Image 1: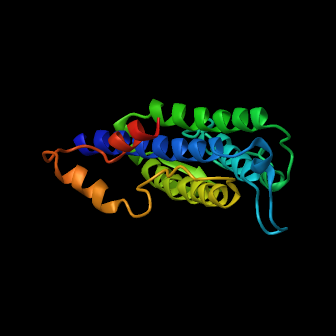
Image 2: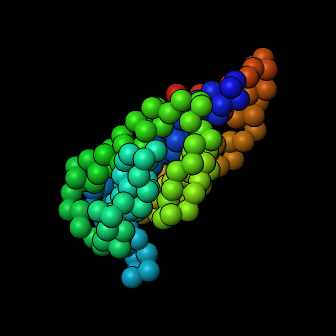
Amino acid sequence: MEINNAYLESVKKQFLYYKLLGEKAMDQLEPEQLFVSVNDDTNSIAVIVQHLSGNMLSRWTDFLTTDGEKEWRHRDGEFEETIQTKETLLAIWNQGWNCFLDALESLTPEQLSTIIYIRNEGHTVVEAINRQLAHYPYHIGQMVFYAKMLKKGEWNSLSIPKNKSNTYNADKFSKDKSIKNFTDDELNKLQ
């Protein structure tokens, strides 16, 4: 059971870290930049947020008892430019994340091997979490990359800044060895 507790704590921190990365990327842009799409095959940050939120709401609402692809979800509509303001965008972002994080928080270690379904395909809860641990950071990486391209002025690095690896490593190695999640320090740095 110890490993199940450790897993749940680790994934919670990972998801919070990526949530914060997305927020810090959006914070660096002017509101209108969140809605920029450079061509028909590119999604704006707003569309990516819409998709992430739609996915989270569908996958994690009643996730132990209903299929993760809800009948009420309109996935194709998630890729249409429907959000008009930064305030609405952030409300949709938080709605999705709150649904997901509440579901994650409600899990007990014993439920990790429970079978749930996404489009009638069975997954253990661990597999469903891992599926999203790949999916959400994939899109948040897109958001960060796009934000860096759109940013007017200097980008505030969300990770180790360019040409600062030696300084970063020297700081890490100057401390005693410890067992903790790498996100502990990173979350504090980003907040």
